[in-house]
Image (cartoon, rainbow, N blue to C red; front, side, top):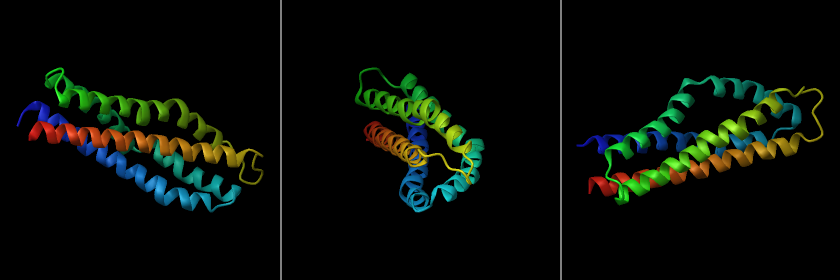
Length: 158
């Protein structure tokens, strides 16, 4: 087993973990959150977001989703199918879990955490919808990265 094989395996595991997290968020938690009124949603976000933001698991996986593909690319030969697939997977990870999270989702979390559950702003539904959309964008990017990394690993190991 080569260094590229190990790095690709790590890419698959990390993307799989993040994919599962986003699958849970989008298909289980979103319907629960959507069923709440404004005050209930604000209360749930006050419980959920601080814990999610501080979770070492989130940070380790997202950092790993950037570093593991870089390690794989260093170990792979440029121009091979595995190299191209890993490059595309890395781009999906940077675009979704990293940049969408940091530049769009985090500021939206700040907006939601500033809400007074007893006096919800008029646009709370639009902000909640934006939260849901960003999660789906990150999910799609992560699921794409997972498929690309899995294909690269399969091609490398075959």
